[in-house]
Image 1 (tube, rainbow over the protein chains, first blue to last red):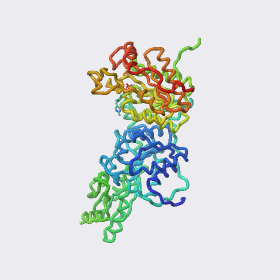
Image 2: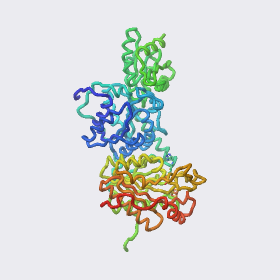
Image 3: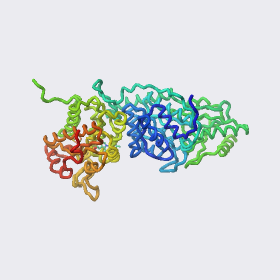
Image 4: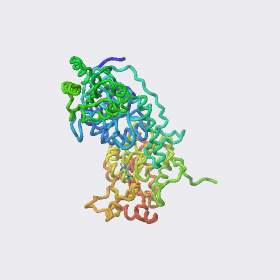
Length: 351
Length: 248
Ligand SMILES: Cc1ncc(C[n+]2csc(CCOP(=O)(O)OP(=O)(O)O)c2C)c(N)n1
Ligand code: SF4
């Protein structure tokens, strides 16, 4: 490992992308993630790369579509309202099987909402905010160090499967200063990109990048191919952290910033003689269903804690499949669930 | 015997799907001839629109990307920034470019993206069966302006070349027409110059082509060409708006 430095989450995202070989960034300003763009604007020229402040998130994501078609490692970032505008090109890119990384530093919605941290875009990220039967890998780091590692992984996964990868964080993670230790060199997946548009050089047949299939039989076949790819991704790329779950009285499901709070709750609860376990999905899609199945019989109950009205809890319920009750505690609007209120909820459930 | 006329190499040997009398196909041929003459097929990347030409990626021999409705200039921007030495063009209709894609075309032009746009103005939405376009003429009947386009309800025809030529980044702007042989020849010269401007790295270039849609205009192919000449040209005067004197 290399040196350890103190850095802001948003800047780490950009630095990690550069280290992963990303030389093309297209974005549109929105709080609380603008430092990503600032960092790229400053650094890209040194790397001979492209930074474009696009006219909109619609255009930015379509530029990503173009750059990915051309075979580049490419990224965009935004926050919730901007991510809604990117959905058009996300769906097209999913269909055309273009690899790219999208960062969503989530803020509270709906609508223009507020600029403080939230996790209310879980449905949009994991269930397809755009139209059609598609999936994208959704990675949810909970520390600045993990943010760095997952951004690098996201580029590799994207190239390996020709898929979109989304990193979801929240304003807390983006704005947080934390120590991060960069590797001296990244492992970069060397993908075969012979499908990309580069110019035929008069040496091969033309390459076509498209998302239109007018013939229903052909389109169904293409969809089946996509589904098979998603199945493979689920098989190989599901990630989860399981903490303190053996013999737990209650298992909490939480990701990102909330999972950090739960780790403190675990310590406090221990003093009261309550054993709290944590299952922290690192990939929100593919969801770590198997881990929940594995521990479904262990606790008296499950509790999903989120900064939303209750979104991931639906996947937890599906995974626990009625074996134990699944409770929910959430805060919205940029409010952060406190240790105290989570502990109260746990005591109430276990009563 | 010498071959005096053949399919340009940059066009693939396949049947096009356009209606009889539609001039989309002629514009394709002109682009392909220009690509051949400039010897750039191997480094050209085209971007197809949403509209009747949505699948023209099947017709060109160069690499092609199909873009979402109106987004071709943004997609082309992404491609060109990755491959600055390639020749990148978009092919877009008037619904695609002048309605849903207005922001993308203005900003690609304003950034001076080194791409070339071939803009097909047929005063109507062809593919979706004849709705009003931003370029529809005053009084023109379409399926969504069944009593004719009325300025008080629908506003006025949008003159894209006039508008884009106010932008510094747009360095070559010309309007041409498909209504007769002489004008088709002019169109080819304009397309060639637009490509050369891009290759010289001077900035954004666009050629607007007045084109026919006999099917949705509800007139036969011959009268459709007459309609371009008599009805469209007064609203959309032909000629160069910018970059006539560029030496390329
Ligand atoms: C987002 C989106 N909205 C609407 C459509 C439907 N649509 C397909 S083609 C088209 C109009 C195309 O008209 P134009 O650009 O003038 O091209 P033409 O067909 O006349 O060549 C529309 C509205 C679409 N495909 N995507
Ligand atoms: S509908 Fe009009 S624009 Fe489309 S192919 Fe037919 S004639 Fe051409």
